[in-house]
Image 1 (cartoon, rainbow, N blue to C red):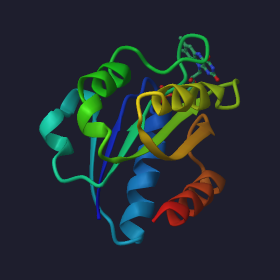
Image 2: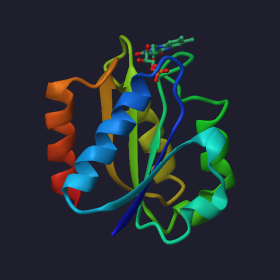
Image 3: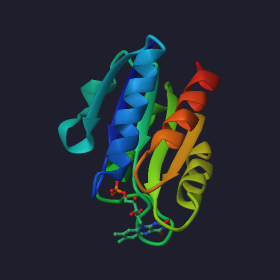
Image 4: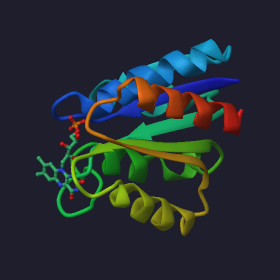
Length: 138
Ligand SMILES: Cc1cc2nc3c(=O)[nH]c(=O)nc-3n(C[C@H](O)[C@H](O)[C@H](O)COP(=O)(O)O)c2cc1C
């Protein structure tokens, strides 16, 4: 099992979830690569079984349109063959933005295995929840 974690962040909160996800996957024995979208390209998706894409809530309950959505759109055919893990940080909306996006991508025939939204930065409680989410899908 090989996993890739790709994310956009404005103030580091989504990045904290990406870091936590990397740790819990590695604890489960999964090989992981982790990159911000601006460091990643399509070739990074080669040989990945699980792809985790991260975004903060932006706009009005929307995903990031500057880097997250373009990466998704550009790689949509490759992503269809992966297990997709959506994650992100929100401020006040309870994570609704990510559920909305998960519903959208199901229309693209994506195999969404997990959706993990967390309020602001990942803390110890969040890490525990993330660990359980990962155990459930492996
Ligand atoms: C322009 C802007 C729009 C936002 N829109 C939402 C929103 O619709 N719902 C929400 O829950 N949080 C919203 N937030 C809060 C961020 O999603 C939240 O602070 C998040 O933790 C930022 O994560 P990051 O540090 O990874 O960028 C917004 C923040 C900004 C700056």
